Length: 355
Ligand SMILES: [Mn+2]
Image (cartoon, rainbow, N blue to C red; front, side):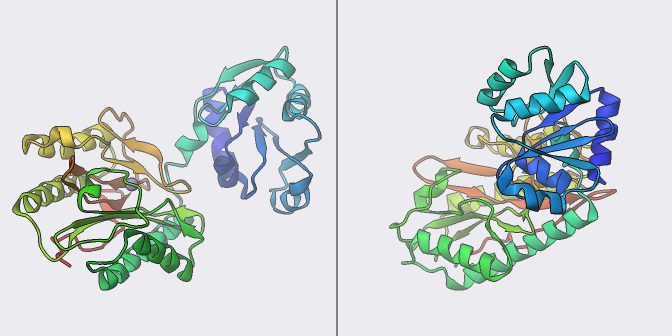
């Protein structure tokens, strides 16, 4: 059980009791899917704080080892009673998810309790996926591939970017997803030079444009992420070259995926190829990221990344080259780290595609 795995890490790191404000982490640990809850994990007891809106639901799904605590006034007063009841002089805090406003309330109300930064233990735990998680992620990747295939059948010059984004969302929901994992990026022509372009409600895709589509769905709570760049009716030689460089960089990184490889060194593999081809300055973002319950989670696959890949991590590999005022190319796939390599979960075609 995930709570037990968390407790064994907290025991090793001497971080009891541990305060978790992140709803996604609470969902991961307890199954609770609501908009208001806090978790306090002590060595032998776990306290789940929420308000009356969620009491009946939470009590019905929480494991029997978890104590439901009803919050009536400020959360910090309720938290104080929980922490006083535990009887230790300190509380370890999950770092990335705690709002400063809540921290200030805790400083006010938890007098006598030392508030200690506690790292992001649950996020690190979430890096390694279990079999159920992998099967949901696999399915999310499959649906995204199917969606991309569907798009290839409908995109043509004259279609508005926004209409493709709408089609993506419709396809996802029709195929069992709760929705898209982020606003789809549908960037045509010069718009593709901006890695996080905002899809236009009015811009039509024109002949001769490149078209970068970055999309993902949420299936059973798990995210997918896929980017392909295709060309409308024709391709300029300069972009044919850029496409080949990005593809080569992605291929080299994908081939290096296996347990033990440093995320920073993986980023370096792709970045080195792009830099050697003279485009280093045009690849401003990191090579990839973990994904799971969140579309961006640990480990970051970035140039100074110091996390080593381990079996059952799921990451993206997404190098890109972006020429301002001209256009950009990005190719992104999801990869599962296996015991001796990587299994690419997204299988949409990567040969140069002229639609
Ligand atoms: Mn991505």
